[in-house]
Length: 210
Image 1 (cartoon, helix red, strand yellow):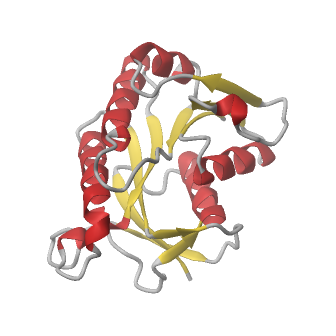
Image 2: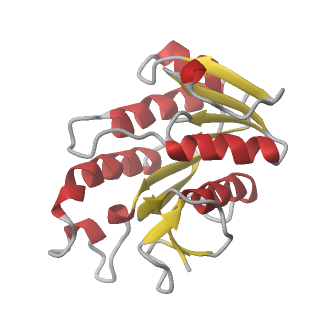
């Protein structure tokens, strides 16, 4: 597949780029600082600088792609709107180009609790994660309202560790047997599998190491 990766210069993005190349995909890595980031040298890697909020930049990188992977990061205090406004632009350009498949990264707080409320609405949910959770919620709502074949991966705390294959997932909820952490390697592994296998179309997915 030809994959465009947004957020390619972050920890998860770099791992996605690496795993995608090692499994034979062609990768278009997009970001402001792609040329100053150390990536695996590979003939199937295209480094494409650009601005996430620029319609032309985003449209040009998506053009000709089979699917999009979005792991946009940013500040946790709510001041950075990259997660919501960035995905809004990505959705618009994908729809304009009729590129339908996207797997996007969000946070665990956007998952539904047993009573139908969101996990981040619980009294014991860490207060410092509320602002970024609201950004993730906006991104999820934009995807849900789109015409795309989307999957929204609602990850817990990320661990800077390699893939083990020892993780569990759940549709529209937190996996009961999963921990509150996920290795970045396993997160990337799941996202790459999902982008082609389409097990969780139009769904939020909980994930955690087992």
